[in-house]
Length: 171
Figure 1: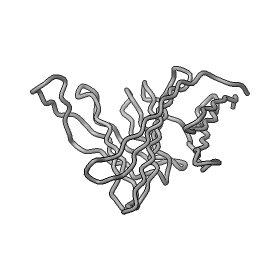
Figure 2: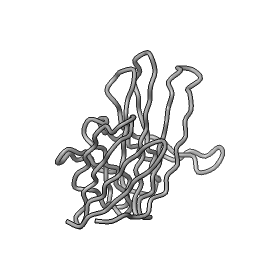
Figure 3: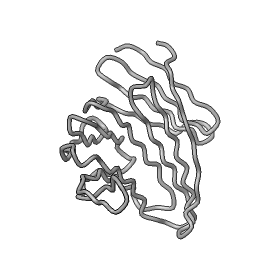
Figure 4: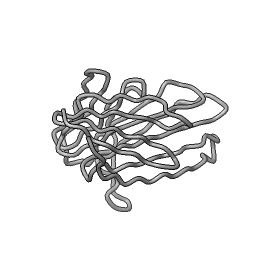
């Protein structure tokens, strides 16, 4: 195994109309794929939804469940969600490539189970590649420890507000 490159960014915002605190961690792993972790916390229960608006020129993704994950993929892009992080559906939506212009586009929708808090995790990869499995566990101090299995290797990722650890081992 070994350490691989990872670039991370963390941002936090409070919703003005509903008060939930939203923390997003965004990690680029080895210039190869993205891991997006949304942590949402409030005193009251909410319906939490992440919407991934896709380019209008790409085919509408298929959704399939396998080995603890759900994948929305179309050969151009895959969005993989570990089971327990939300249900995945496809909706018809739109994007606005410039002011005043709307184009029909598919939207990948990840919906968390209703509650006062939610953890939404997505692994986003180009070229339609998708991991074969994603395992998540709660680490010390609210960190999320992940193992992301690909065909040729497994990546170990720790998402934490204070630090980032990424490692790789061959299969």
